[in-house]
Image 1: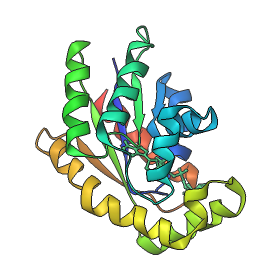
Image 2 (image 1 turned 120 degrees about the horizontal axis):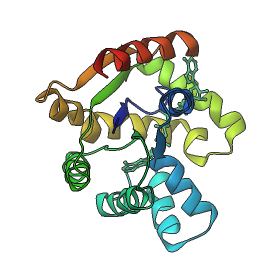
Image 3 (image 1 turned 90 degrees about the horizontal axis):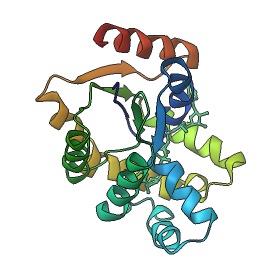
Image 4 (image 1 turned 90 degrees about the vertical axis):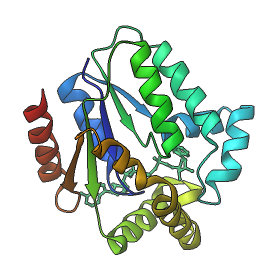
Length: 191
Ligand code: B4P
């Protein structure tokens, strides 16, 4: 299996690049952000709980997100591989993902970490907020809170994968096409 993690701060282009990568490599896209927004749209209990955190720019509790990913993996037994987008975001999520991969006798091949400056992140997210209807993109304070949450809880997840030599850093500023080509070059070197 080819299992990839697309990593980076909010607004670094994970969702944008995932759409292209899953087509090229035939992978199953698992975006915890998308899964949570779908739960909110269905007004499920999980969705209503998650919304409270997301609206404040905070991470949703680990057990909720891990449970969601576990079900998504179990529901896709025959895929060529998974592209994890926005997951794992904490050390506990990274440890849980390793266990889930082991149960399938597979592992994470590579973490692609996209780097984008803070000013650019703010401007992309607030711009998306003008049209997306996403409540977590419209308010500058919430966008800032998401970036702080990233530095406090998520950035260290890359260190976890660095121990195993699995992290590749990609500059996430430039055209969508150029960034996509850089990501593909790194994946092709590893597979
Ligand atoms: P996510 O849905 O993961 O949202 P994101 O980090 O903001 O998005 P992404 O980096 O994918 O940005 P995109 O490509 O869309 O998370 C939302 C919330 O869900 C979190 O704050 C948290 O509360 C919760 N959550 C999700 N996963 C969780 C987890 N594992 N644990 C706990 N909580 C979790 O790009 C952004 C914008 O930039 C777009 O408008 C795009 O068009 C633009 N853009 C992209 N590439 C560009 C480029 N090269 N140049 C210019 N603009 C570009």
